Image (cartoon, rainbow, N blue to C red; front, side, top):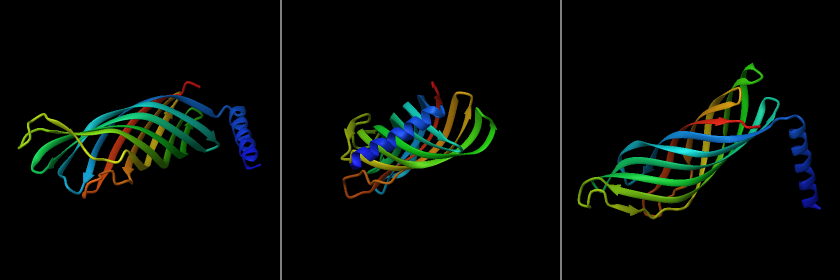
Length: 196
């Protein structure tokens, strides 16, 4: 009975959204600036990265719900055991953002704010020595947790079918399996295009 009610509720919501033509989706690309906040690192420096993925949005009056899914490549630098080191992190991430349109210029141009959780599956986290006792350029893997829960806050603007977001994404999961603690820390700028 519970499954029938849930299916019926989902059907009503989807039908209502489609009837009002408030359902959109499209590709998304972006740039990131990120650091790994690790208790064993010093001189943390942000590095550049990118995201590639897609967005889905359901608008209900001034509110909207937006799931995103994307591949993310992040880099950062720090000193580890007195050795200058670069980090490279690859992950698949999904967001569930709740947003609100705070100012509307026209029906197709408005400013938004949003917040919500993310889940990230980290595919790889590698360190590369730049100097010091280890061979410069040598690459080694870190012992890390592949599961990362994050929190997002940000703002955006829509112009016609284009959508632009700036958001801060903070990891809530300690992904370092050693005695140190480590959290991801990312500023992201994305651009999307609403196909529908």
